[in-house]
Each structure stands twice: as structure tokens, then as C-alpha cells.
Image 1 (cartoon, rainbow, N blue to C red):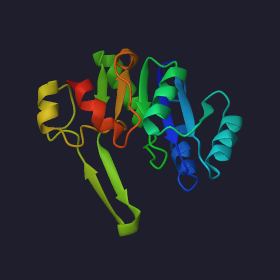
Image 2 (cartoon, rainbow, N blue to C red):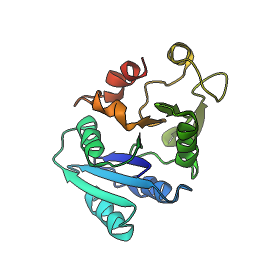
Image 3 (cartoon, rainbow, N blue to C red):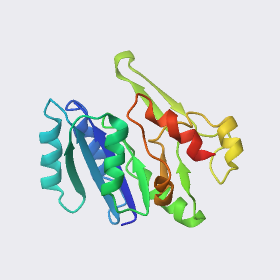
Length: 188
């Protein structure tokens, strides 16, 4: 497997379909596995995940865990993944159709440990959208020191893909803002 995408989901019945649809529609049709970890949801999230796993058996796997938080759910997803690279999508997010193909091709071309992309934030309740560029200079290889100093939203987990070997050393904690706890350490 080339790339594993992990979705940790807790009570996301309102958004999970849009998230999973965006992953199923990825232009990277081979070598992509989608792992959804239901983190003890009390709504219909688990049923929705199971329905997608049944409909897309070769592409999507659904697992169910007792509620432990997003970090432990992501760790569980990593343990079940087989990809050379690993990425994350929050259950209330969706991605462009070519996101993971482009990131994976960039990773392989440059033998990258990590590839980062830009982020669009949509504020439904305010009816507005903002775009955050990961780097002010655009794309290409960059010195990690420059990214840490000048990168925007560089502590997000969900705008990156990571070489599997990084996850041998790093693990999410069971806390709020679990990505802030490890991503900057991982980058450095």
C-alpha cells in the first residue's frame, strides 16, 4: 500500500459522509487505503462508517474503539495501516479530489519524510472561507527551520502526509489539541 488516510470520528454523523465521499473520490484510485476509527460515537457515526466499509470493501476499513479521544484513535488507525505514507483527515473536513495523489507523488519524487499542503477553512456559521498558505513562498523543498519560523498553521496534522518511519518514534497523546503536542517536535 502506498498511502493510508486515517479518519478519527466521534459523533460526526452530520459531516462524516461528506468527508468519506471526498476520500472515496480521490484521483489516487490505487494504493490508497482509508481507515476510519469510530471513537465510541453515541450517534449514527458508527453505522455510517460501517455502511461505507460495506460499500467500498477494498478501499475503506471501519474500526470501532471505546471513546479515548482523537489522539488515541489516530494511534489505533496508524497501527492498522499498511501505507508507506500516512495522512489524516478530520471527520468534519473534506479534501480536494487530487490532494493525496499530488502529495504522494511529491513525497516519492523527493523521498520526503513529510509533505505539506495549504488549508482552506470554512466557517459555516459565519458563511465565510479563508485560505492559509503553508508557506509564503509557494511550493518546493524548504529548509525545515524556515518552515517552522515562517510556515502558517504548521502544527496541523491534517495538511501533511508522513513517511511511516516517523510514527515509530512519535505517538499522539489523549489530550485536546493533540497535534500541537507532537507536530512541531516531529518537524524539528
